Amino acid sequence: MTEVELLPHNVCRQALGWADEAARSLGIRDVELHVGAESSALTRFANNTIHQNVASHGIALSVRTAFDGRTARASTNRITREDVRRAVEQAAALTRAAELDPHLPEMLGPQDVPDAPRWFSRTAACTPDERAVAVKGAIDAAEAEGQTAAGIFSTGESVTAILNTHGLYCYHAETDAVFSMTAMAADSSGWAKRSACDLGDLDVAALAAGAASKAKLSANPIEIEPGRYRVVLEHAAVLDLVGQIVADFSATAIEEQRSFLTGKLGQCLFGQNISIADDCRHPMQDGAPFDGEGMPRTRLVLVDRGVVREVACGRAAALRTASQPTGHGLALPNDAGEMAANIVMSGGEESVESLVAGMDRGILVTRLWYIREVDPAAKIMTGMTRDGTFLVEGGRAVRGLRNFRFNQSVVELLNSVEAMSAPRRTSGEEAFDMVVPALRAANFHFSEVTRF
Image 1 (cartoon, helix red, strand yellow):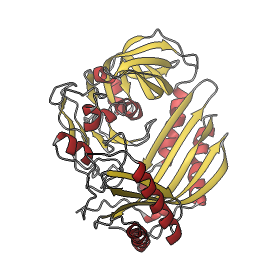
Image 2 (spheres, rainbow, N blue to C red; image 1 turned 135 degrees about the horizontal axis):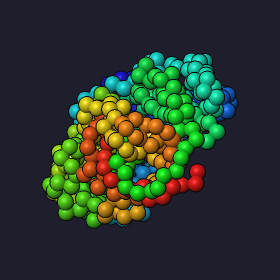
Image 3 (cartoon, one colour; image 1 turned 90 degrees about the vertical axis):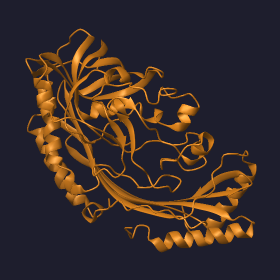
Image 4 (cartoon, rainbow, N blue to C red; image 1 turned 90 degrees about the horizontal axis):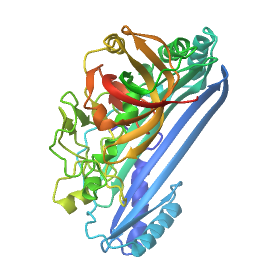
């Protein structure tokens, strides 16, 4: 279990001691703490100039009390005896006022959580000068093509810990680095974004060159008629769409009949070449190896060759449905229950270039944005393409296209996949990264041409 100076183990245990002391004075035995600390720094650039460098450090403590079938929590951003005592008193007051929950799980005792090493010293120690040098190279790549670059390069470290008066103690330290850049020309743009726990896995120069190349190729875009086209969706576009169905793989959502999977477990809903897992220990994934309740995360096979197999299940849902918790619960109390948060989609052996080469005529999409749900049952989404949409003819991208609005069922998309690339860790519009492939599919519905 990696310990970092940002939030040492003794600070967490001291906070629990103070919380236990305050709770016992109120006649309360069940107390849970969520302790988090974060240190992050960000270099922002626009108009080919670095214009901002900021750094932030923060700590957060959330205290949950439970008694008489009720629970609630209160929070503070300081860890002193007095602040912890005050948070316990506030949580206790809120607990007394909370509704009775007949399915409230007891607080967990000690858990065997295998470590997931995701803290790298070179990422945590990255300096503003190091980020500036990398950003300078990215700007140079855009300027060489007569373009204007804008984006961010951030690095940081974080710690999260869950502990309680029943002996539970979970601790996870992690670093992260994120680079994102948009290269802008007179009438076109290109984009690239990637994240990694290890700064050494982030190739800023290659990302910048890719964004500049897309902006160059998509210059002087033409307009073609909307309709259904064969399409190659790059990794970010796949994430943007697959991410829209992740919350449905939830026992609580299915129980409450707000998931499109209600009554469909065990059915073949997608193409036989589609397999999706939740796997927090995948080498390209990130995040803590325990959930918001302190349970070890287990690997889930969400989709196996098109068949819906498993869903995330928190302890409260498990009690209600007489099933087993999977280690995907959100911090109690909550309304959502649980969520699969470490998505890994299987892929193939193609490259993006070979996916394009296998298409006589179609459209290559870099990424999507402004995605909204149109039909929750059919998982029809609408949104727009941006930062690199290309006409493909004769197996190659020949020129840029005006952006489209799309209306597309994710279920239909995952039933029409012809080929896929190898999966990789991918960033997009979604709040968390996924490991997904690029793919080629038939009959993607572009409903209209946008005016920007």
